[in-house]
Length: 454
Image 1 (cartoon, one colour):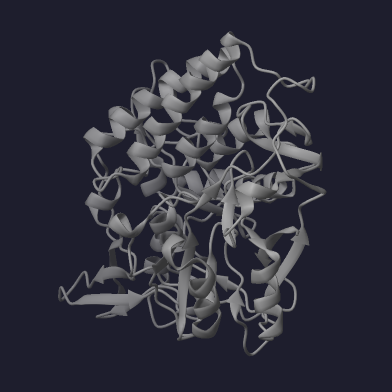
Image 2 (image 1 turned 180 degrees about the vertical axis):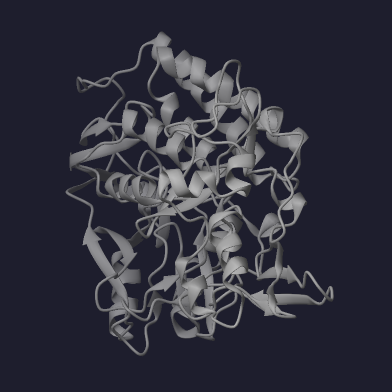
């Protein structure tokens, strides 16, 4: 008898990916927990053509938390674990696939005989191990499951399940042996001295951490989510509490990183993650790379949003609330030197590279953006330089869009479609949803919708 980790191959496989806004639909996904009640079936995934090696696979590569299965692969999963698998639909041009979420946890590890190290922020969860010992009786009748005390994303299977997948010639799966030893009975607790024994203080700290973890999950997975300023401000109050706790116990930085990522503040998400990530953990390294390289508009805390938004010809005023922030006391514009004015915290391009004007950069006011002084003195443009290729539009209009309009083109631009045009002028950007970017002609009022590429 053996226990195997089952996963999806990333090399020589079909790789799925998604637009950034689609990933938000997965924010509330918790490994091993039922998602059907708040699952969004409009989730749209597409094939990464540059990284895809095969024309067909039974298990597409996307996320380690669950499986994207073909119909024939799903049948094997259901044959061996029909009562413990949740099937979740999604949209994809590669038809005939469904997301399978294994729900069962099995407490089958002999923690006394196993040799391991736990996470600092989660003392009940194994981070590294040199030996895993399983209890035979706890494995009986279990063929596909997650393991109590192991990372939630890890899915294990039996010999029988592995043989069924391999004998059917399934493509896209990979297996790794987990079991070093199978014993008939569990060793009595405390019979073998462990370095990671918990005292009452550690247990109390763990309970507090779990309480805050549930609070964070509750906010993120709420049906209302973080869509209103009231809910968002309450979420920031929770962030303030976590910042205070993190000063005493670094493990709270992990929760903070998750919180900041969910309000699109990747700078702070990265700052917090740096405090706790382990460079030897491949999963942590992947997240470290993602956070350090992601650039996105920061969602401004409602209490700090500018109340007097400037007006721009090519961006609707309602879309500007996350682009300007009220100045702090004695804060001056780095261009004109004025105080007590609104500062720009959106996107720009510097030498072709997308940047964000958040707290780590000298900031300038909306007036200096609108009159072009900020672009001139900082040697930046706010919207894609390919706008110059639209030669049918007057040069002064192109310059206004590039140098005097808040940077919103990163939401929809490509090298082929730069910005919609109507009545010999650029259209006004009205906002985006999960499926398209919305525009309106500044002359005739015609509404235009650009579907996101998938």
